[in-house]
Image (spheres, rainbow, N blue to C red):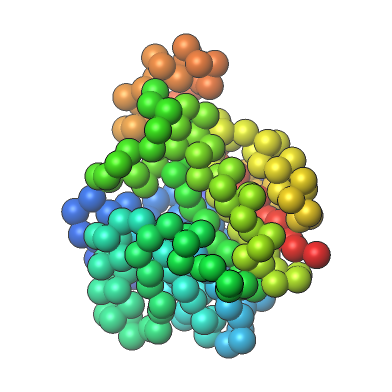
Length: 228
């Protein structure tokens, strides 16, 4: 599998972000690169889990896809709606948990850049910007839910594109997706400098065996899974 530099320039320009809303970063750009490699057309139905500013949803919509974007943050929903209006692209943007807002629906593609940063706290934050990155002590609180629910959300032949850190176990993700009946592989890896959240948790991450004493870069992975 390739280890690649993070490609930028595939997302809409001039995105707004209300305070506390996750702005597109290296993981967003890496997922945008994976999305650009997929066949998307006017009949393609796409679900984005955790839309943030709506960057990836807008990227898919700009290619003609019919996009539903979901986020638990009301500010993120408001931000994505503003950006959709500014870019004059049709998006269905829903507030709430993705499993509750998609009951009875299936999609051709799922895009997910979920919270995946290991945290000293086992429960997810009740609110605030940390909801965009904190995901329990192993970083898998949301990833595991996506793995479990992807089969019921995808049409036969549908694709899941999921980005997360190597800290929270890509092999575990592959195994869970396979157990759920999907064919999954890691397609891309990229290394990016540690951001402020990881730097602030360096000692704790070392204690947990999730990082070495000299680590200064985080490995990101794209996992692509297909339903049968």
